[in-house]
Image 1 (tube, helix red, strand yellow):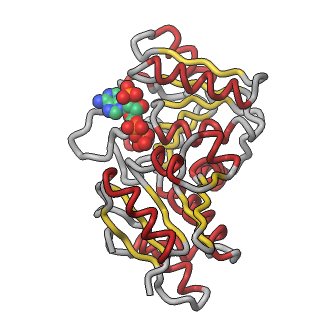
Image 2 (image 1 turned 45 degrees about the vertical axis):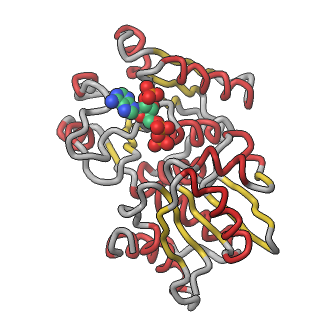
Length: 281
Ligand code: ATR
């Protein structure tokens, strides 16, 4: 019986069922995780369905902000970033949480084998993904969080948000056209997080001019897009360490699994389920 769902619009590409059902099966709990296409207009009714029928939900684009409004209660980390990707449902009560930040933190540690303490993090993008993860990073002992985004005002809002959470943190932003500032931010960053939606579609332009990258740069790149993109290939050709977004999806899903079940998340099984699962099933 389906007790858990991933919802989004679109959702047919999702690998969450393969990944989550692998975790449930590893604990002898069957395959209780399904998938459903839900539009933004349908989200309020979906919450009432979920309240009565489900134990947990993962939400993806474009529902994360509206879900924060519709939840009965938010965890402190979801309230801080105003974004919800996980519903924990018990006795008709819906608790909204955000596991994206911890998912990216653990993915960086897994991919690059080092802690975030003292690091300078540069985000390319200032949408939902950047918001949920940047706010989390203010709690990870990082030295600086900066943003480059086409719409600079949105990057400015994230700078303000980071400062509200931690008034001591260094947070700055700039336009991609401000080449001097871009160069300065790139030269001092330890990590560049590619957090725009560009790369999802095969005909997308790169998220920034690839000439920004040069061999010998010390930064490492994490691209939140999980299939190989021109950016990832270009970085590899320059000898820059670069990781695609799969591990972030694994780690945010693992955190959701722990929250729902109280059980250890079997990460290797989840990675296998992600790789072998049929998207959308
Ligand atoms: P998500 O929840 O996946 O982060 P989002 O909130 O819509 O999605 O954010 C998309 C991000 O990709 C934003 O940073 C957006 O830039 P703007 O804030 O200027 O809109 C960025 N993005 C999307 N298409 C882009 C494009 N063609 N060029 C540059 N940036 C783009």
